[in-house]
Amino acid sequence: MKDKAIHSFLTLPVELVYRILDKLDTFTILCSMLNVCTRINVIVDDYRQHPIINTLQSLGNQLDPQTIYYLANILRHDKKITKIRLGNSAISDIGTRYLANVLQYNTTLITLDIRYNKIGPAGAQYLANALSYNTVELAINTFILNIPVTFNIDTHCATSWIQRNR
Image (cartoon, rainbow, N blue to C red; front, side, top):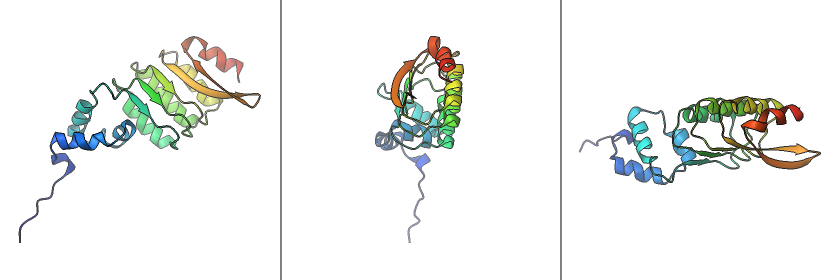
């Protein structure tokens, strides 16, 4: 009987790995494949040099704080993602704190869209503090007189907005 060779994902040719990556969205690539091993990091980084991959989007997925924590660790030093859209993802104040920490280190981000999440006053304060380190355009929402209001916050108005809406 022939001995069957056991192949691993790590031994696949790069071209096959790229074809697998073509079937995944950016969020899955970042959360599932990065920081597994050095070879996979190199392959994913080379793959992400394609100019199309600059937006991370996960709309309507329930992202628990642990998932946001892992995502934040990846994004902290990422130089390719410029837009993050995590709307309607049940992000809480704890998850918001992790994202705010990213803003202190990552200056590549242009837009962070976290509308329609569960961000309370504490989460808003984390974001306001982080905007003193970063000039990212931040899209969030709040309720005024039970009417949902969505607007963008930049560095100059974040702190005064938080103080007025406590």
